[in-house]
Image (cartoon, rainbow, N blue to C red; front, top):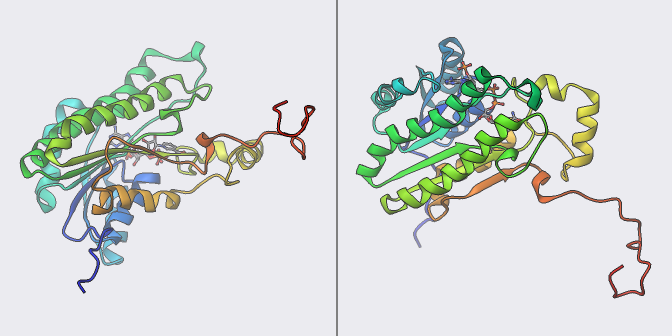
Length: 275
Ligand SMILES: NC(=O)c1ccc[n+]([C@@H]2O[C@H](COP(=O)([O-])OP(=O)(O)OC[C@H]3O[C@@H](n4cnc5c(N)ncnc54)[C@H](OP(=O)(O)O)[C@@H]3O)[C@@H](O)[C@H]2O)c1
């Protein structure tokens, strides 16, 4: 009997991960490399990327650092070409770079609005456009767009961020329908509450931790490592018939919440009837 195909192996694949210098992107870059991919690690801060590349190489993987500003739309075709010059044509694109300003409606500035949209949506779309051209020609590719809980759920003081992450979900669906015939899978990976440099300050507040433990069905705020399995799945042959999907990795947060129903169900009507 032939051995089963290595469904989750990324051997021989080339990946580009944006926002790889820290947080979620860094962990995803390390995970793809650990599973065999050659990884182009992109962000604006080259020093942090070089540190990541060193870490990946010491662990036996292959990686290169690439300075890239996802918010600079006109630079993205050249940035995609530079990424392909590192190891060769890209098989996997992880659109992870993202920014957030948490502010109430009254305080949202045009400057912040433009900045969040340019990175979270515009950059994601135009980098995908640049990379997908080659994927279409080769009839193969995996695009992973990093969304959020707010891809499908409302949270206060996050109006602009939420509209960009909602857009990530819709962009993912639209591109999945368009690129499916080219054998390119496009999915969104939607993390829950993850402790990273973007959120560490928030989650160091005791009342936030208490709320998280109570509100998240799995009872804890996550770390980037909680996303590894899903990221490798969406990058690998294991997800070859999955496209247009938003995969929420949120400890059950968007599934709902336990409610304070009394033991016994709190029935006032006879058993079997709905109270
Ligand atoms: N942490 C969470 O709880 C959470 C939850 C849901 C979704 N997410 C999403 O997950 C992604 C990563 O978040 P994170 O928490 O890991 O954030 P983070 O710790 O702030 O890291 C953000 C990464 O994006 C890069 N970046 C920022 N602006 C960029 C630009 N213009 N061009 C290229 N790279 C840029 C940063 O590097 P440089 O500054 O060096 O460019 C850094 O590597 C984001 O899309 C975020 O919305 C996070």
